[in-house]
Length: 505
Image (cartoon, rainbow, N blue to C red):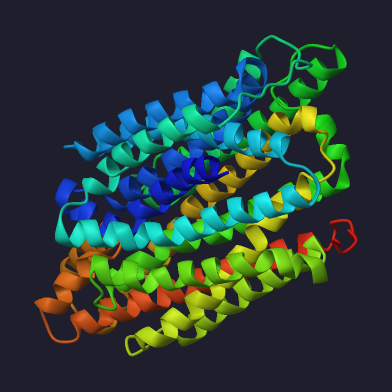
């Protein structure tokens, strides 16, 4: 259990450790705002696109073997990411990291699902969920410390020694499991359809601000709307193709029959929506704290560690709490706390907000994450037969990662779009020359707000620093409100989950 939890934790920590270091990386490698979004979204997208394929491969060839192979690939890609000298090199290495992560998570989760049953499985999922929630919060602290006191490159290189320890632990203590009933054979067309479809959708959401949704600045047709349309069509074709393969008895990438299980169907929809809100938040919050509120990378990580404290605190209480409340109730309370905390942050964020208030709200948010993450996973897998655990784990992890990629793309894109519009409006109110407004707006927008700190330190004119700072605050408030609304929608979907009896014993 320790090895499995640590293996998954390393993947999740890497997804968040980069968030806090990202403003430093933007300056060091000259990333544009789109590059910054792709640095995170590429990882999540490849992760999501290949989870189904490799999850099924683990069922066939052995989950332990896949877990070890994924860790080795993840460490190799981390070494390249830390040595990156250009945006393309960094994004490419993040792509390979996503492949390694796609091998680790479903094999770890399906191993856990196969090894434990009954109340032991509930406790195991609590440990697994706490590891995910806790590491998602510790990652920013570690990233901030490394970016401030050493180098952002160690945010990636740190994966190597930790990964080696995890591989040794897996070899010594994790048993091999597989599903001999899984039909052999591949589904390359299904892989291509799902990967291209999700890639096109995320491309449209990230690049919509830069190309324009319908027309580019030069009047030519934007590729964004055609890409979004193509992505949706490809996903629909994928679903039809997978249904037909299953009908003909051929190996299918996705077992759509699992969606006949009400707990699984409703659970994965809720999981995707929740991931969209959670990871979109973790992408945008460090940009606000470092870009406008004057926090260093280390200070940002220290603030976000309050989230980890909340998650760790509630994780120790979950086994006892599960005796008194149903899994569904625990998930619903957790999501309600998340939505309320983010809504309160949107309501109170300003240049004068106290650090203690931010920490308090993130602490409450962390409690919600700890309650919702593990129990939602356990609940949606509760009716899945153990022989299909690899397939079901792959599907739910895929949909979570799709939600993560969409969260970074959608909420990140919203933040940049709002930041651009409000910055331009605020600067126009100062009656500055048009070329000055355009230059400042471009600098703020393309740096995803990280240029604001420089303008605060050496303002080029009266009122300019305040104008761009207020623009970032306004854009962040809008993004936070949307994130809270998304989490609330996820809460509504949990009402469709079946009412399970309160566990006893």
